[in-house]
Amino acid sequence: MKYVTPNQRHQGKATALLAQRTALYQAARARNPQRWAAGIRNWQLADAVYLNPERAQQNVEDYKKAA
Image 1: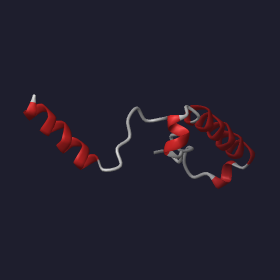
Image 2 (image 1 turned 60 degrees about the vertical axis):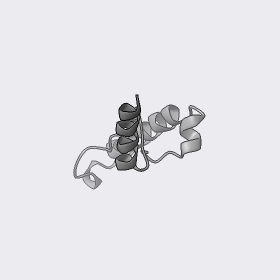
Image 3 (image 1 turned 135 degrees about the horizontal axis):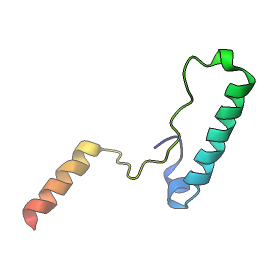
Image 4 (image 1 turned 180 degrees about the vertical axis):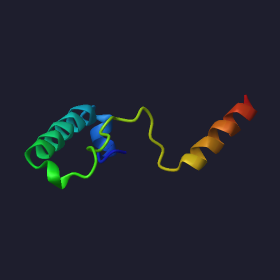
């Protein structure tokens, strides 16, 4: 869930929060590049998040069978 709470995501705050984190990490990397062995994290917001993806996939298959 990219380090945002479900509530932040549902309230629409996740995009702004992740943009803030991206800027913060980029600034930290610019200040001290020796600390970073690789690039910063991917802070892009995922389109859909499932807490139990295997169960969610099973539900989709069940719905298709029922239709």
